[in-house]
Amino acid sequence: MQKVVVIGGGGHAKVVIDSLQNMNVYEIVGFTSAFGDQESLCGVKNIGDDTVIQTLVGQEVTGFIIAIGSNELRKKLFNKCLSSGLHPINAIHPTATISPYASIGKGVMVAASAVINPYAIISDNAIINTNASVDHDCIIDSHVHIAPGVTLTGSVRVKEGAFLGAKCTVVPQKSIGEWAKVGAGATVLQDVAPYSTVVGTPAKIIKQKDDI
Ligand SMILES: CC(=O)SCCNC(=O)CCNC(=O)[C@H](O)C(C)(C)COP(=O)(O)OP(=O)(O)OC[C@H]1O[C@@H](n2cnc3c(N)ncnc32)[C@H](O)[C@@H]1OP(=O)(O)O
Image (tube, rainbow, N blue to C red; front, side):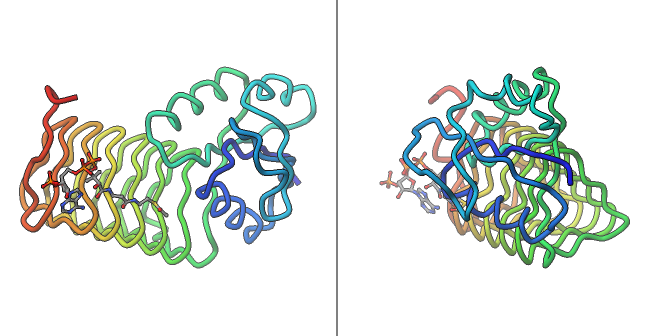
């Protein structure tokens, strides 16, 4: 079995480890944690903070996945692991339904009961969380987090680093800008500007790029 490391030791890491264990195709050598508070998660040991990444390459570890919900931090650590010579692996829970006509990038997490329909494109280091639905022709860029229960209808575009909160819905052909945030339960009827935050039904802007 290919030896892999899970980067991150919080709640999301538990879900990623559980998915990897269900896949039964990788040997997980450990997880890293910035805080060192947990000795083990789901039977997998804590092997230290992110400074161990460089040392793993010489220990026959070839694969990694970043198991951190924050899109900014997940992007940073993804690039760090790539430059260390490790290769991103996917954690796809066996109960996820992924069309053979969909495209899935590298370092992607697809959680239990998520659905990815034909001609959807999921880019590197994205999270499609529990029971989320990504419909036909959606394009999800890198470092995006689609939270549990989100519904993306047909041909939605989600740009780099955007975060879509739990159970929000986006109507067809709308675009969520780079690093934008959509609140839990929102209904998005219009394009969302980059770096903005929208909430509610219909979704309205509460924060814009200049507010940050
Ligand atoms: C497995 C997992 O756990 S995966 C993680 C899933 N996590 C989520 O789904 C979290 C989703 N996050 C949210 O909905 C957040 O509230 C965000 C990102 C939209 C906004 O967060 P912040 O920028 O910190 O906003 P803040 O908390 O300051 O709220 C600003 C205002 O918007 C309102 N607001 C915030 N979120 C929402 C929402 N989802 N729906 C309606 N109103 C909201 C607040 O009540 C507040 O209103 P007020 O100014 O009248 O008091």
